[in-house]
Image 1 (cartoon, helix red, strand yellow):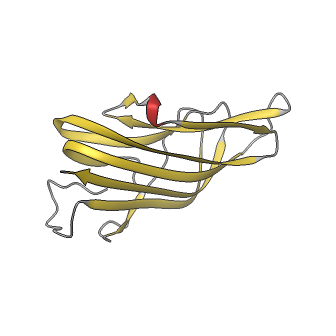
Image 2 (cartoon, one colour):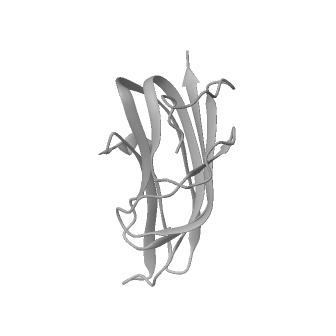
Amino acid sequence: MWNPYESNDRTGDVRYFGYAVQQAAPAGELLMARYCPAEDTEPSSTVYLPGGRYLIAYSVNASAAEPAASDTATLGTAPRFNGVPFPRGGSFATVPDDGSAPLNSTFVITLPRAVNTLSFTNTGSLNTSYQLLNVTVSRLR
């Protein structure tokens, strides 16, 4: 996954990540692959970011990958920074057992460490299918 400490990429401070289709168990991490500027071909659950202030936006379509115990399912995802959940950036929806929902959020965060990690986890109560994950990371100056 993109690591600015090992990259000679000078194309700017905006990075785009995504993944077409994947499943994640509750508390499981979602995979991402950097697709613009293209550099990595192997998906990873972690993006490395230098310290600074960032505008982060993501969107994904979610649906339960297994039947719920009731007539509804809670679907969700949230970012984690340095392994710690960031609830202000989370998104969730309660849907019918066979339903789906778009999950998205946009937020600004200041990362104080020299090296930081960003990942996304399934915060829902069921195994969830995620389609068309798109993540934009913009460094603010």
